[in-house]
Amino acid sequence: MKEIKFVDVGEGITEGHIQKWLVEDGSEVKEDQPVAQVETDKAVVNLPAPISGLIKIVAKAGTDVKVGDTLAYFGTADELKSSPSTSAAQKNAPSTAQQKPAVQKIVASAASPAAAATEASEVLATPAVRKLARDLNVDISKVIGTGPRGRIIENDVRAFASKASSVPVPKFSEVKEEAHEGDIERQPMSQVRKAIARNMELSWTIPRAVHMDLIDATHLFNIVEMEKQKTKDAGVKLTFLPFIIKATIEALKENPRFNSSYDKERQEVIVKKYYNIGLAAEADDGLRVAVVKGADRMSIIEIAQEIERLGKKVKDKSISIDEMTDTSFTITNIGSLGGGYLSVPMINYPDVAILGVHLIRDMPVVKDGKIVIGKVLPFSLTFDHRVVDGAEAVKFGNAIKGYLEDPEFLEML
Picture 1 (cartoon, rainbow, N blue to C red):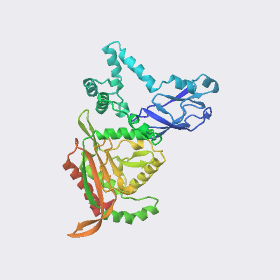
Picture 2: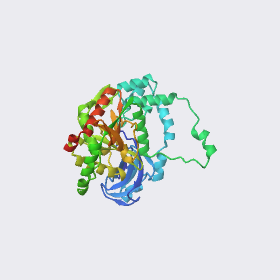
Picture 3: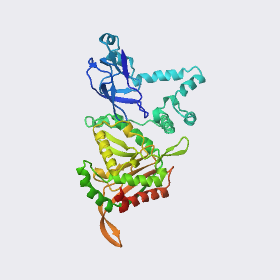
Picture 4: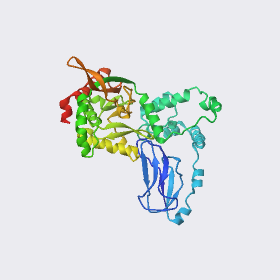
């Protein structure tokens, strides 16, 4: 008899939500057959059967699970008779509320400082982060890490210390809900929305500034319109975005610190020599970032095809974790939503910057001393002010602008 557990799938994921079982309880399954769909922070993961045999499901659909939790057993009918039942498994797995006192008891009954040190050494954290925890009087074993593979970073320790020292305030339910009984609905957050919330909190810790400008996109607009029908006949949907990606990559090559991330613990800038462009994509359950990997080695048509492929996978929730990680720079296409003049995009942590491109509009532009109507593309560049300064942001923005306004560059692509 074998069991299937919710295993560590990487990227610091510690919990998931069982969307549905793909097989019936007690049915015959084959080795490697997908048996369950589990939604994580990043994507929906199909879990395969470890062996051929009968399946006994112990974790119901619609429930949350943590890494290491048993989801089902596999084996012969006789073997499964001795496996824990669904109710027994739930009974043996205490709730979070039940577990907390036990943890507190273990910590309180540590025989010596050496025992506590042994327990703390099992936590994934650098010496600098451990020292910060000691300085702030934080028990690091109770801190939930948001770094790679669950590593505890400085922000996690500071956030824990801040919560511990905050003055309790009356809950909304205690103040308002009773007065509006029947007119309020509590909606639990999905795994995706929880992940978005965590990422936004991480992003908010970045000291950011924003550079905004306007691009004369008349040549860009004309070229896309001219080539759109040709590519449509070839089965490719051409938009402005592949051209923007190409121009951005050229600007990144000239301004490499925008294609980087910041290691706060070591106070180092990690400049990346690859160009994995993240694209913010709206799905019905929240925002995802699909990644066009190695975009500098692709043609305009290949980038357009990859954008379309990833977009479909985001919509049908089949996109993998690998296809949503390892960005070097991110672009959010606000114009694709049909509105917005200028905005302040949130940096996709741990990137150094994010480019927001908006709706191309007919606007007055000056050419040869005369005011004419042109196609204008507004953009916003949010950047990490620890890594780059405003002058560098203007230079980077001017490079993007220069490429997208250059007919020769656009015609070469």
